[in-house]
Length: 210
Image: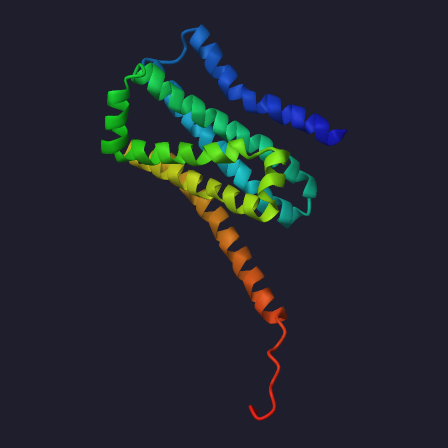
């Protein structure tokens, strides 16, 4: 019961940023450049939620709170939701669905290219987030596919760094968090690999080969 209520609280909490944007739009409080404000806000929340999603597994293992895993899917889907809003702001409010300009941007402006890549990588993760897809793919293949979230998060951080160019403080903060999460993942993988090697049975020695 407690987990169910915590999920409700988390769901409502994840809606706060978009509700805040809606209220600011209604009260004409989006600043001198509303499109830029919306773009930056949705981009920030995409990265925040992606990194929070990636934090669940190490936090669960370090604290022993296995129930944390139940919040990971919701956080990941909300990250995709805000990434979609971020992209929609670009194609609708900025480019007015001008496909020629959008394709030119994707091909010529590297921060848009890598940002678009990050969004595209999130699509199969969102589609296969259901229990049915986990069964179809099998646990191991599903886990391998969903490791793309690290690549998507990396693409998002690079997208932000290439976008701002000058004041890199905020994107570098995101980069530092992602580096810690990737470092944890690498260390955990190395420990697991070393345990497998240590527990592997020794090859039998044949007579005459001593």
